Amino acid sequence: NAVPMTLEGQEVYKITDIIGSEPDLGVENLKGSGLIAGETSAAYNDIFTMTVVLGRTVGIGAYLVRLGQRTIQKTTASPIILTGYQALNKLMGCDVYSTNDQLGGPGIMYSNGVSHLAEPDHLRAVTAAVEWLSFVPSARGGLLPITDIRGIDEIERPIDFCPSPNTPYDPRYLITGCENEDGKWLSGFFDKGSFQEALSGWAKTVVIGRARLGGIPMGVIATENRTAEAIKPADPADVKASEAVIQQAGCVWFPNSAYKTAQAINDFRTEDLPLIVFANWRGFSGGQRDMFDEVLKYGSLIVDAFV
Picture 1 (cartoon, one colour):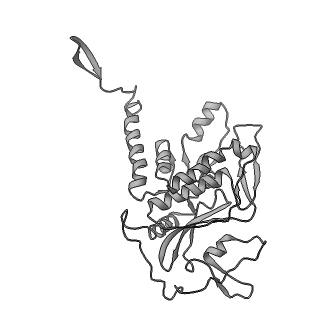
Picture 2: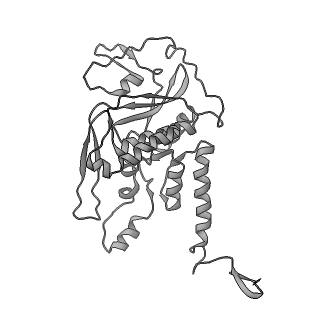
Picture 3: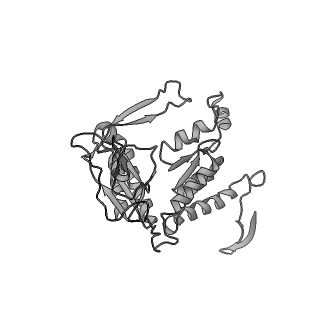
């Protein structure tokens, strides 16, 4: 579409719209998509944003999931994709992929940190969302939702769990507490049963989540001191590709775990949560592979998140 106008004394036409060959298939859609994406990105810093993915999310929908950052994904029939597998198969001229889950199912999105939580059904997904909301003020800058823990735990109490020197242990026991060999409860740092871990499928050398201390909601970041595995799946589109299993030492920041740490700090900041970091890192992994995989870039994001 165009409208006539005068420019420097000449009659010209001003283009107002570019319409595709069919309605709703042209570049006119990009204006709306770009507006939605920009508003979602800005909203992350202004309000609490969360996406519960209960069905197929495609194209701009997939980007909106990521721009809102916090994501709960149902484990079945809820892929987060840019292009459907049929279109990719047509592009490559052969049947490489058989389902959309190969492209954006929880095996991909929960393992790479796009999805914070993966739940088996609608009810569990909505329940997880409500539990997450219970840690967050009703408005930015509002009062923290403090929980009455009487009958559940004591505010004035010792921390019973104590790791043995030079012995690997699960850092979640320090956070949540655990039972010893005799069945006696050893209390952890936070209130009993309050820890809700997130992003546990990704970058396993760092543990992050939300917990309560004396009923006060807080963000928590802890170091995994045991060796973890990072798995990179083989792409069916590459006949020479094979699954790669990378061993990652404990107490070390790798590119993915540095990014996870920065992501968690930003999430807690925009949720107005106090943050406790159990810092037990020896430093960043500076080998050739990790330097190539941008550990310097992702490590810098931690500082950016704190300031």
